[in-house]
Amino acid sequence: MSREILKMVSGVVLVLLGILWYFVRVPVLSDVLGSGGVVPFWRAFLLVFAALFGVMLLLTGAVIAWLGYDDYRERSVQ
Image (tube, rainbow, N blue to C red; front, side, top):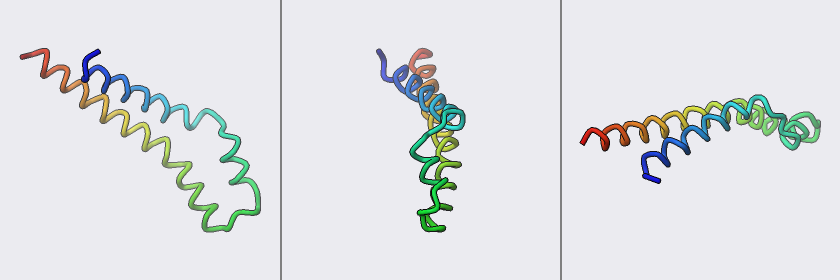
């Protein structure tokens, strides 16, 4: 498999993981956020991390897939 196609596939996988992050319940994370034993600062930090992690995966995957596609298109034109 060529390197460009591998980049595109890994980017698409990251995009799918970013989408699934919001629809699949993560029991460990929800237990930590739901319990009262976490210091308020860390609880807020974990909440922000949980909210932004999926978007970060989605955008990183989209950029990697786009770069892989661009390399693949450039290689096929030559």
